Image (cartoon, rainbow, N blue to C red; front, top):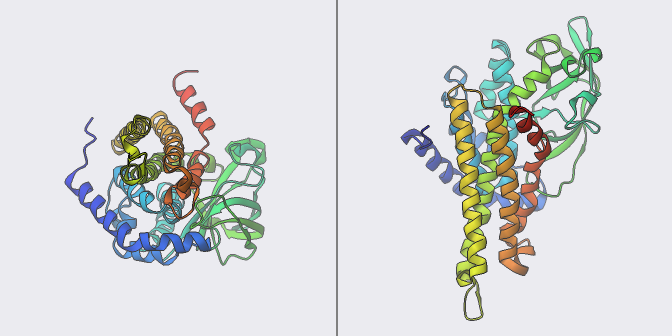
Amino acid sequence: MDLALTDEQKAFRDALRKFAKNEMASLVDEYEDRAEYPQFIFKKIGELGYLGARFPEEFGGSGGDTMFSVIMSEELGYVSPGIYLGIYVHLYLAMSGILLFGNSDQKNKYLVPGIRGDMIGAWGFAEPGAGSDPGSMTTRAKKEGDDFIINGTKMFITNGTFADFVVVTAVTDSSLGMKGISLFIVDKETPGFSVSKKLKKMGMKASEAAELVFDECRVPASNMLGKENTGFMAAMGTLTEGRIVAAAFAVGMARAAYDAALDYAKTRYQFGQPIGKFQGIQWMLADMATQIEAAKLLTYQAAWLAGKGAPHIKESSMAKLFATEMASKVCAEAVQIHGGYGFMDEYPVSRFYRDCKLLEIGEGTSQIHRNTIARSIGL
């Protein structure tokens, strides 16, 4: 198993670092304070071709494997978790769902402009009363002629306030439980679709999340992704690779918090010397560095398996579980190393501390992933 980056992947990483430094870093404070998303970033990154790194050439992409997604997630998550979250949901949930399960017409209609940054997608899975338990989903889609009529509410939808389309799960046969769920693409202009409210969040404030309402929302049957009643498995298929990318996201955020703490430990003087000279601080940073490397290796292993087309459900859950919990620990330690300044918003570690928690919840909670791992080892 060779986890070393190829020359092409290294060049992609370096290009993304330059983009993040030149185009994203200066936006962070402004859009975090405003709790708004800089939608123009999609066009900027799309024009450079980076949004298409993981997508086939026939739709305007570069045909790269999962490792390219991992690289993007780690590098952009390092600079601005909030801004990157919008890109992440667009690429690895909404667009990936269409790539994996859409037909030719759907792929050309949504992937091509989505790769250019001309269209932005969202992923509508969670509901006010249904998150980890899709069996309690209440959004319904009823067939009526050549259309489906969707009624229900979706919650915590990143990009939901401004997305051009939303990939939505809805129950099409309640007698089948989770096996009666289907996936639909809903365009924002569709009558009966509305954004009921923008949500206030603890972290990731440069991203936007919304509650979405579907009230007699008439969607053409041609907007169904895959076959009727196969939506749950399609959603799980989309999420499997997304979890690897989420793990890389956590690694990037943890790296940023660690780097900030290491720099602070070298420059903050107490008792006549840098605090990094005290063994207590040294051990904290040594543990942080070790945990980051361990998470990175788990993530790269899962990406390598995915790139080979090998089974990787267990490895994806392990990477996501370990990396996201690691990020929370590292960010908490980074705040502790900063002392009182770590509690102040003028230092980035306070933002990382708030932002990292989402990654333990989204894409399957830590508890759900422990269940997945337990099943995979025969329990």
